[in-house]
Image (cartoon, rainbow, N blue to C red; front, side):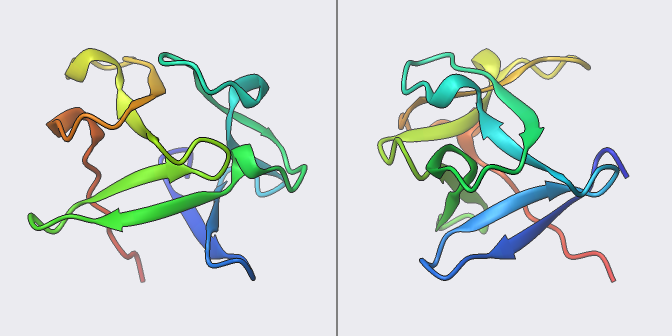
Length: 107
């Protein structure tokens, strides 16, 4: 469950990512930072724009995830590294593979 999130749609058209192992938390940009390299963390739901996300569909079927407080940034795997434990962060939109996410529906 710590690798599954519920994308819960909000009234403004964005969504919150709720980790299924602890549904009181949200995926959050740490400290509401807009800086490149700001960490994504699990944090108590506070209804902040740093916990709201927009999914931008890409031609390859993936999405780019943009935080509500920093629309020019995207969620990415740090430096595109594929190693286990690599941090997830935000970075300016660069249209690279480390900013592409495949969303899977689990039934």
